[in-house]
Length: 401
Image (tube, rainbow, N blue to C red):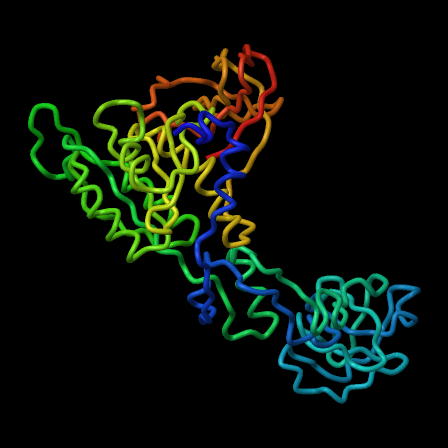
């Protein structure tokens, strides 16, 4: 422990963590399976978008010159549907083609007038306004063939998956999901649904952490809770290191006699740092166990949640070059006083209210690190620098959950 980085800042902790990376592989998946995944390489479009000039409106394709002195009477020479069956239509002087949204523009036409601004009488149409050139969507105006439209690391949101389809890709390369072992420690832990004896509590951290792992697009592996013995912990860590890409433990990282995760990492693992200047959540550790990266998260549920969001999640995004998902950040005016700590970056749980003057943040719940309901009932974290207590009316930074 003599030269081990101890009680480091969040920035220092993340820098240390990012020097150790898991093995990241890629795989090819169908678009239906791409939602929420991370793109493994730059993706170029196979086509122009749109692939041809087309109408942005249901209406009539016309020569703009014929519409400059409305109302204008023109002869309807064709109807062009979105499937573009009639691709040899030529609009000449005094003519118009009925056209549907998305249908190819006919030769000779350079403007559109939407149907509601037109009156029809048999094979004739009266245009009540000038034609609209900006209602034409031109070939390649959104994206050109061979253009890199999504970069490596893109988090594949629904719109991005749709863009992959627009580009013509049936399958795409994505980062293979990392398998993340989650190990909760403590003799007092019972599974939800079991009968509780005096001194026992329901184990909740692994369920919340598993959800956060899924949120980032990876595969959680909830392992059996470990009793407070070094032998049981060693067996569980060895199994996790042999089968998973990352280990997350919960509990056992503080300074007590039974904080065995810290103890076993000091004696048998490769410990890179212990404790960070973050409240809640100061006791975590990071290192490797049998060459597998391991984060020792605090046992208090709020602390484990905060450390995951502030340390583990950025590390995972860095390891996979992912640009998301991540929390939105904004500013808000305080509706209540919030207190910082003397030496740590402090996150206070708040509810957010939308008002006519902007967002207002209220600290409404007990801030204990064992009170998981305080996160479930809150909308975000107010971010406070050390010694930076804020009062009602002050503007503060907020991480939106």
